[in-house]
Length: 101
Image (cartoon, rainbow, N blue to C red):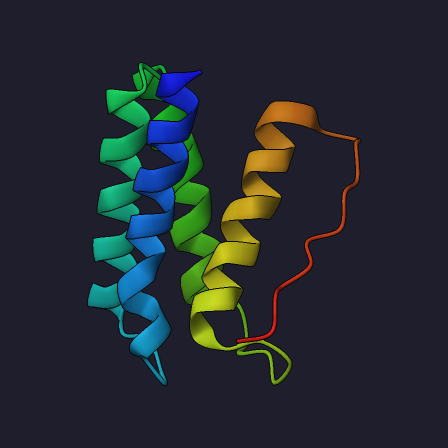
């Protein structure tokens, strides 16, 4: 269970610096993906899974139009949530609800 809470903390930390951004640059996205990659590898996730997962996140984060309903950090969190759901439990839908800041 400690590994899971550590992974949660590391993923949360990866998104923390995005909250201050009004618009995300390619380097912001790459930095976040780098932190996600490190967190997953430290949690002993298979390298092939990490590479595929982070490639999908990068592709979607750079390719999606900016949502007016979500700030940039929330949009990246939603993408990561969607991809985690695809990897861990494809076909099981759980809505992602953002807390009001």
